[in-house]
Length: 171
Image 1 (cartoon, rainbow, N blue to C red):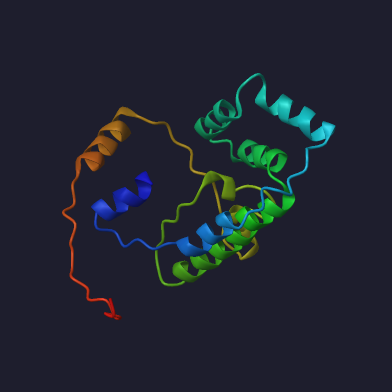
Image 2: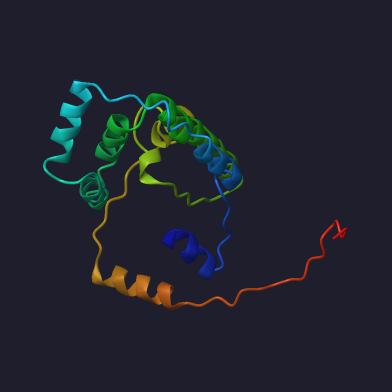
């Protein structure tokens, strides 16, 4: 969200890589009734991954460490396959198609959740299959970066409003 807000504040063109309504419908249509208990093997792998941390603590650590493979592994162990298909794989394909289409028109900075990046069906691999070169950019959070973030956070963009008349006025 910070990246999106920074782009808006700096008057950059921003577009979605997927339709928010479609993603929301996917989430709302998840069936919570058909979740099976994970196998003993899966539970053991999850316990090894967590190493005496809560799932939230482990995910926060993986994110801070920029370890997208561990984020993906955690999702594999905790999410039923059909949920991964709906929440990750199908959406990854949609977002990668959008990136490809937008990149054909010019320079592009794209952002998505870290859980969408890794794996054979993750966005990185899908982009590579389309011929893109994808390389990680690692950097430290420096004092310069903290100051830059603070300045962006302090920017206030005056929202623009316009009056719209409903198409149907039968009320």
